[in-house]
Image 1: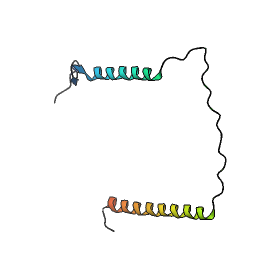
Image 2: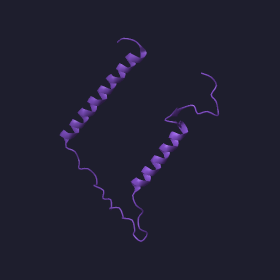
Image 3: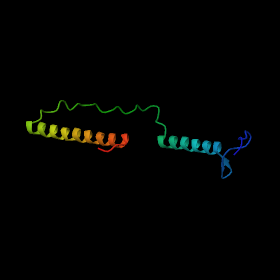
Length: 97
C-alpha cells in the first residue's frame, strides 16, 4: 500500500468516486424529503389546531390483592436481576462459583 495520491480518488465504483456517490445520495435524500413533505399549503388557509388535551386524572386506588400481586412480580424481577448480575460477575471475573 503506499502513500495516497491527492490527485486520484481512493475509491471508484461504476466510474464514480466516493464523493460522487455521496453527492448522488445527498441529492436523492433531498428530493425524497421534499417529495414526502407534499405540496405547499395555500397562504390563505390557517393550519389545523391540535385537539385539546384532556388528562385522565389520577388512577383509582388498587385493591389489597392487586397491590400484593404487584409487589410479588416486582420482587421476582429484582431477584432475577440479582442472579443475572451474579452470573455476569462469574463470567467476567473468570472464576467458577
